[in-house]
Image 1 (cartoon, one colour):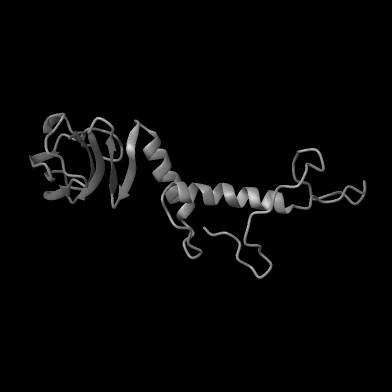
Image 2 (cartoon, rainbow, N blue to C red; image 1 turned 135 degrees about the vertical axis):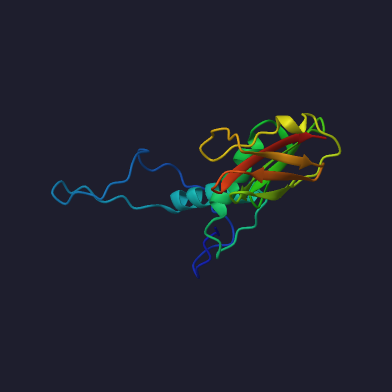
Amino acid sequence: MHRIDGPTAVAALPAPLAVSGTPGFWTNGDPETLTPATVPTQDWFNTVQEEMVGLVLEAGLTPDKADHTQLLAALRVLFVSATGGATSGAHLVENGGYRTFADGLKETWGYVDVPGNSSATYTVPLPHTSWIIPASAHTIHNDDNAQKENCGIVSTSLTEFSLYNAENFTLRMWITTRGV
């Protein structure tokens, strides 16, 4: 995402022009009825550009001309931080994320793919000093949202989980933690 930077771009956002027509929709025009095609205006282009750049900036990202995933990344950060009243915003990390609430509660989420008949370790992205819910209450399920019988937590600490999978196929195990 980036602002226009061509040779004819101006450095400051121009003041919007007065409304000169009826707000409506685009048309390709119709030569038979002499209806002209819609011509986009600087106001329209600037509004669309600033709406998108505004999302990127609000998410704490720096607009980057070479990064074509910034709008999606910004939406993920902003939507996650908007849920549950997180005060420090949500932070996305590889395979998950975390957020901190005004009362000190920390919430983390993520997943680890555990190959069949093996174990794996999930590292908590924002370590807790104590749990709000016991380790047995952490949710672990496959992508199909079905609870699996032959998998689970072997051990936990405030910084990581040891997980096992006794199935004959890889399971994606989701983990959610709440603590302080």
